[in-house]
Image 1: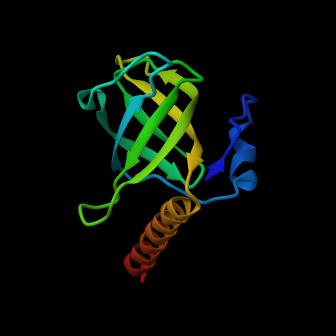
Image 2 (image 1 turned 90 degrees about the horizontal axis):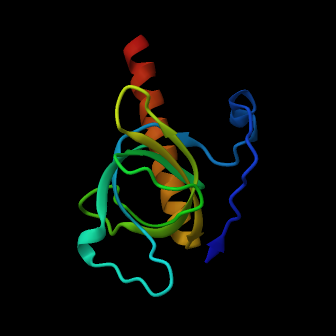
Amino acid sequence: MIRFKAKQDRIPMSEISERRKYQRVEKTIIIRFRIKPQKGQALAPSDWDMVGVNDLSARGLFFNSSYNIEIGAVLDLRIGFSTSTVPVKCKGIVTRVKKNPDTSIFGIATAFTEIEEREKEMVDRFVNATLNSSLTAMQFQTA
């Protein structure tokens, strides 16, 4: 099990692309999440919510939600790449929340805090395969 510490420091976007250890992809993927209960609370399976991820890497993800989830909240996550694969199960911590000024939607940035090495590699392979297929499609269109 790999555990990451979430960084609270803000990094300018201009520096992020050079500092990222893992590639990320902007492709809609459906995930399920729920806020991990605090001690003494119980959650029913119906407490899971389904959303589309806007940005994914082996370190975390970004999605939109109608819920204003607090920074620091711990999420149980289930990431599905297709109907034929078992979803990646991991935990993440909310590191950033941004409200869309025109709607009641919140952008939620989440860093993975507990993810098995095998599942982290699966996410990274998916991201790289998606990026490579997008690049190949772009090269084909310009040829």
